[in-house]
Amino acid sequence: MFSIIQAAGWPIWPLILCSIAALTIIVERIMSLMPRKVAPPTLLGEVVTLTRHGLPSSEVIGKLEANSVLGGVLAAGVRTAAQDPRADESTLRHAFEAAGRAAAHRLERYLNTLGTLASAAPLLGLLGTVVGMIEIFGSQSPGNSNPEQLAHGISVALYNTAFGLIIAIPALMFYRYFRGQIDAYIVELEQAAETLLPQLLRMSATPRR
Image (cartoon, rainbow, N blue to C red; front, side):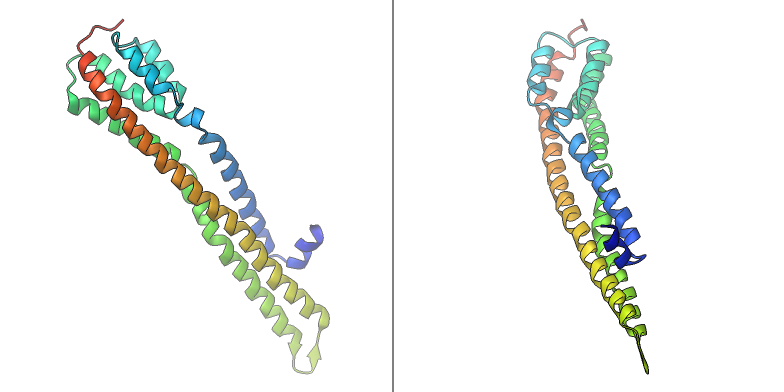
């Protein structure tokens, strides 16, 4: 590996940094977008069951908020209904929407950076190719042929191009995968809020336990 880095020349170092950054973001997003951290399958049913018997206490709402991203969205609506017994549909819907926007921003964290890395890696590889071509032409000056410089120029050109693509292709694939996963989660959050909203409208006048 070290011999490849040496053969690729200095343009390889920005690509190595990009690969480290992309791998870090991919691992972080995989861990953060796990279903149990975003939208546990049974959470909505548990909240609906809980609110059938009255609005919960602030302590229970706090635990719900800390449970997951979905829990935070549901907790926003439940807290609004608990704090204002006369809250109407518009007020509750606004609370859900505000929490949903914050949740979407949280889910999309670092995603733009990953997309930028996927776009920049081939360009950095192209830069290495250009540097390698310059070295190739420099080795073939009139009356002076330098085989060693020619070989190094070819190595710089090919290694950087290949490494740029090796970074860009997985980064782009994971970017698209995460984007689709986040879109599905956002739809799930919206549907959960719509499911809980009628329940809160019925129970908003019920005294807190």
